[in-house]
Length: 121
Image (tube, rainbow, N blue to C red; front, side, top):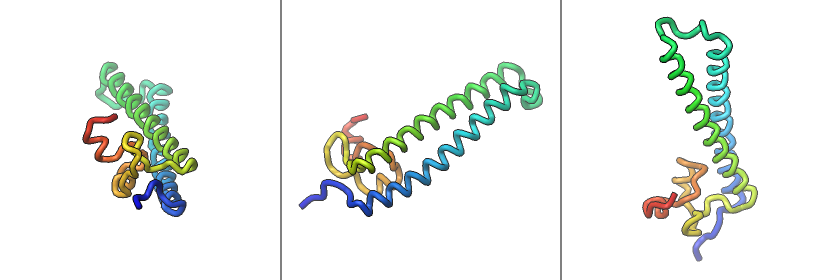
């Protein structure tokens, strides 16, 4: 019989992995936010030789990185909710289990490789 969900012990392993990734992601977000605050608080502290346009571009780049990091954190937090509800690792398109290898590489994945290859997003 085909397995329809991961066991509680497997879910616990994934929870630990995701919580570790969440810590790293939150630390990275804090770093970006600090960089943005430093640029805003002290515009004269811009890297020597950068004109205003380059400084603005750098600020926009950091803002984009921070936004991307926030989105990643949200995906990881959603994965923790799926673990809590015991539906983690189930492909939202096929209803089959996503492989452990894929979930270890992309712990917030909601699509199996099969569904991803068929073009689902």
